[in-house]
Length: 214
Picture 1 (cartoon, rainbow, N blue to C red):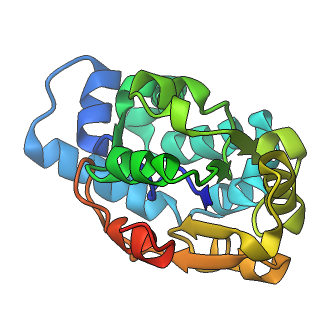
Picture 2 (cartoon, helix red, strand yellow):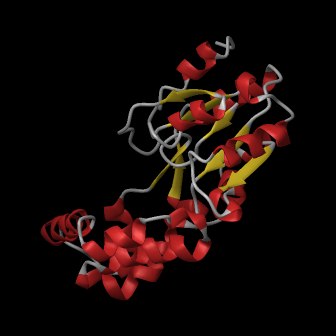
Picture 3 (cartoon, one colour):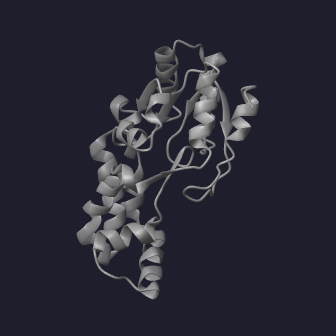
């Protein structure tokens, strides 16, 4: 069984907390609302939109995409690099409450597990920091393969590492096109609904039922 990372097993700490940490000073609620609104507006900035294209095919492209977005808010431009480094810092990520129990149950039943993620850095340290690394036998990071989901190459590489056939493998994620696209590579796919807060229950019990391990 394969899992996505962000939005599936983990979620990043809230942006308000990260911004306060990056600025290293108090930020009142009105100012924070303005900064968050600025980030939301920045997603439609032409330079930001352009930087997002193929952002996960290399570490450099990934960093450029995010720092361009952060810098679209003038007050955050000086700390754009700091905000990006937070992404790579394990302590800024929070596993969903049912992530560890789900992975543990699957492994106890002999299900081989892998991670397939569109990402710009190695995820092993984050999983290790939160005690989840021992459950994972295959790590497929898009930036190491210079492509992005739903490229079949990524899913098939993970299947080979786990020594399982694509038709016998389930991809679990939160993106209909990228993770759901595993079906186009011959896998089954389960797409979680969006919107779970950091540390909340993600609804991964559904995965156990699909695998017959509930």
